Length: 498
Ligand SMILES: *[C@@H]1O[C@H](CO)[C@@H](O)[C@H](O)[C@H]1NC(C)=O
Ligand SMILES: *[C@@H]1O[C@H](CO)[C@@H](O)[C@H](O)[C@H]1NC(C)=O
Ligand SMILES: *[C@@H]1O[C@H](CO)[C@@H](O)[C@H](O)[C@H]1NC(C)=O
Ligand SMILES: *[C@@H]1O[C@H](CO)[C@@H](O)[C@H](O)[C@H]1NC(C)=O
Ligand SMILES: *[C@@H]1O[C@H](CO)[C@@H](O)[C@H](O)[C@H]1NC(C)=O
Ligand SMILES: *[C@@H]1O[C@H](CO)[C@@H](O)[C@H](O)[C@H]1NC(C)=O
Ligand SMILES: *[C@@H]1O[C@H](CO)[C@@H](O)[C@H](O)[C@H]1NC(C)=O
Image (cartoon, rainbow, N blue to C red; front, side):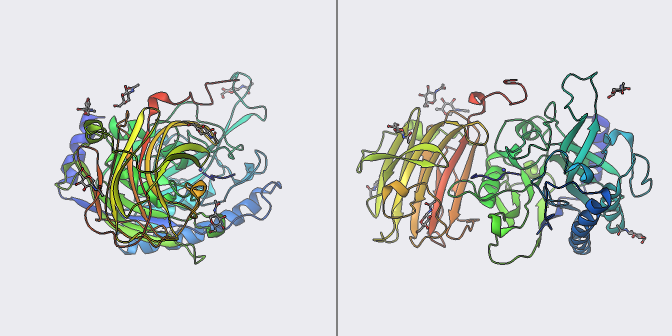
């Protein structure tokens, strides 16, 4: 849960290549689920009542899984917290948890349901995968008893983990992932002791698994899964509250897939009343399908074709030197004064875009951001600003950011720059944004009015410029280069104080 505001084995490899030589693309599915929440999440419930709620959610997930399989999907991802919701205490979540073994035990819960104790949720998920012949990815809770022989054992005698599970198309349990980057409100779960690099091979590529804040907070396990384990596709159950201007779900997910150059299957919860919506199927060169819906209360199934091995595809984007262009040019001379305003508690340095077209530079600490742009028409009642931030973000997780952004301010008062704004009227004929980044982890965002993405309308040049390819199809909310400088992060909370 992320709720901002207040989320090689040579033999195997050979087998895999032989199997996949016939398959260049596969059909991926994600399901945005309008989870049925328990009314009173701090009250203790019986296992029977917990199962009643979980089965209601599993019934809905089963409908989506069946439909996806009928449409040929090879794999489907369902959201974090999709089986029983969120906001529990350590005690009140207990009835929802199951003992989830290490997949090395070689277990098919649909065939051997009783082998590891009460495991009705695992059995149902495994049977869905088996019955509809599709890989199923879900998120649930694991419990592991411990005692005083382990000095870190919590006082209630058990670890509780936010856990992703994966079943193959025969129902076999193939992967278990304990979330490493818990969100601040997840006090009812324990941190995994070490980051787990959960990945597995299939006939349609190599997959890695993590969840929600793992994409924003610490480097691990996300970056190593991509760079060291070289997964083709990341499976990403999430429960993500949209936080404009920089961190709405589809905006950030799409940018992360492009910046890391991987396929990403992101399934979010659907709860517009909490600003939670936004799921998609993302490829290294842009989104293949995405969904953002603040209007209805319904879930949504998305399907799209993806490359089995995107790195081997002719459309695979080349590596980018994110600072090359920005470091090579002279600063554009300032036209407007600089001012400070916050984006989600971070003190950005901004300059207002006072002309219809222009070249601007703004710097904060070591980061200078350059922008060239042309609006179709400068409107009286909307202002835009160019902002830079180079610093440690410390609210709800600590992570070091380097960000360059062009954004619409909330009102015509410059103090409102960086505040949430959902719609815009100003069209842009062109933009080019770049920055003197010290990190190679930069995620390119282009967000249009009403949280719409802009597939095919922009590109990243190998010298680090994020440029429009043509006049944008809708007014612009925000364009950003969202950089993560992992070397400057704080240590993981599990290893810092205490
Ligand atoms: C799977 O199929 C079997 C036999 O067709 C059926 O009894 C069972 O209820 C199904 N399970 C699920 C989870 O759909
Ligand atoms: C403590 O836990 C370990 C494994 O977690 C187990 O092997 C051992 O039997 C337990 N000891 C007691 C006294 O329960
Ligand atoms: C990017 O380009 C700059 C300037 O030429 C160079 O100093 C730097 O080493 C390059 N970075 C990478 C990662 O290649
Ligand atoms: C933001 O930073 C500037 C200096 O860069 C400082 O003058 C200002 O007080 C800061 N604002 C806040 C709210 O911390
Ligand atoms: C911005 O700079 C480019 C080249 O550096 C120049 O061609 C263009 O005229 C400038 N635009 C404005 C509005 O100053
Ligand atoms: C943005 O402006 C609207 C009115 O235009 C206001 O209702 C809203 O509270 C503002 N948002 C923030 C975060 O200040
Ligand atoms: C960060 O990048 C800037 C601009 O390229 C450079 O001047 C600075 O020395 C770099 N800082 C570090 C710590 O690498």
